[in-house]
Length: 251
Length: 279
Ligand SMILES: Nc1ncnc2c1ncn2[C@@H]1O[C@H](COP(=O)(O)OP(=O)(O)O)[C@@H](O)[C@H]1O
Ligand SMILES: [Mg+2]
Image 1: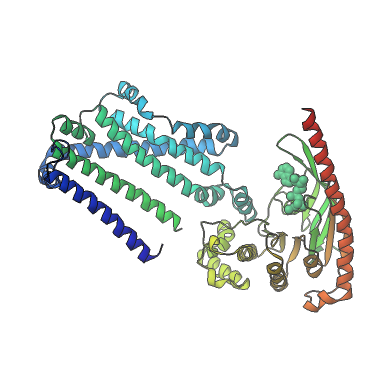
Image 2 (image 1 turned 180 degrees about the vertical axis):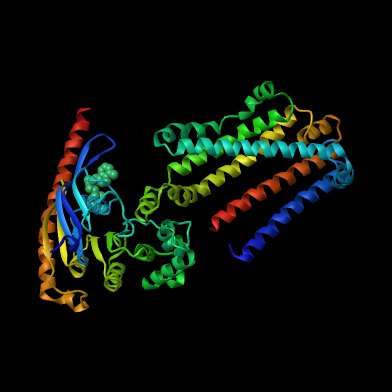
């Protein structure tokens, strides 16, 4: 995309954000929307100094970050492991691939109560649930990536004298990488959803728990401040993963 | 003639493939062929007659069902990248590597140091006239350019023998002619033994010392034509009586083969249709 084009897109996106903000300010000023449902933006902003000084905020953020990290490691490690084992074996790939794709359409949240039964109400159940949620796209994409590496690349590598290890490191991995990375990215997003949803549904700590208790206490401004933090967390997380992907795409 | 004057020697090579439906296909039947060092041999024949299969077997990339293949007097057991280079019919440059890194890859596999790798890759890229694209990615090059890079990649390994499977097969006639002339220049310069699969009669006669005509189903060698004109050949050779005569003979031989192959295919189609009808 040309630079000018990119600038224009960014300007329009900023404009849309501004429109949302204006509507928000207007609606709350005129009192058309109850402050319990939607507080004034400056009230939300005013929450931040308090929140940033509040130790429960930091504790919650830390718990969520740790759960998220754990879930991501779990999803990626198990997804890659299963994906590699299955993807290198053509028959297994044919059987498993549709199952893994189908699993991604199942509302995995149904299994959350089982996670609580197994791992308790603490962070472990969030790690397990987030990891389970994020596992499927990683595994599915890895199977697909490895089982569709064109045979002609392997033949060419053999003709050029690659040994088995070199075939793996210089051909299979780079050939599979873009698709695997996009699976990891999707998995990461699902881990985050899984962890926060888990916290919202049943927990004693974490950002999701704080959000749930702000909502329960009708502390709406605080609720919105927490949601904002969660969104920023998502943005940072996605940005980091996308950067890894871009670096790969440019060689 | 001593053993080592022979670059490649196939003796009674047969190849059976098992198709996915469990049917057996005889791709090659008792094919024997000797390629002398420094010789340029073309393989030509109807599609599906086993040209690629023969080339893969000559290069040790595929194991024959029966028969023997010897490379420089030694029994062939697998690919020998220091001696035999390959240029494939389909595009096999690695899309995640730059052009230069693609040419380096075989040297990298062999453990050649970075400096030497770079130098040899650059020299060979220069030879095919694409130095300007060293840092480009394969996707940014046209098909013809990619095949030239594939030739450079094979030459960078400095193999004595080069096996080429319709390297310009996917290209249009005009691009092909230009690349063919260029190829002749490059290969002449490099002094390699070449086995070259093609479906262009002109290309075969213009470039080769010998043209091997194959017949299909099962693949066999039907006849071998010799082109006496010394190489490298001037463009004027394409106008000579010898060229025209050889080309015409080749055309007759192939025409019969194509006809037979097409009729066989039609027959097979009818049989299949019948069977489907009964089911
Ligand atoms: N890997 C394979 N498995 C089964 N059959 C094959 C395989 N490769 C080639 N064949 C069959 O062997 C015959 C010769 O193929 P090929 O060597 O590619 O011919 P050509 O290069 O002359 O077109 C064809 O009938 C083809 O269908
Ligand atoms: Mg072929």
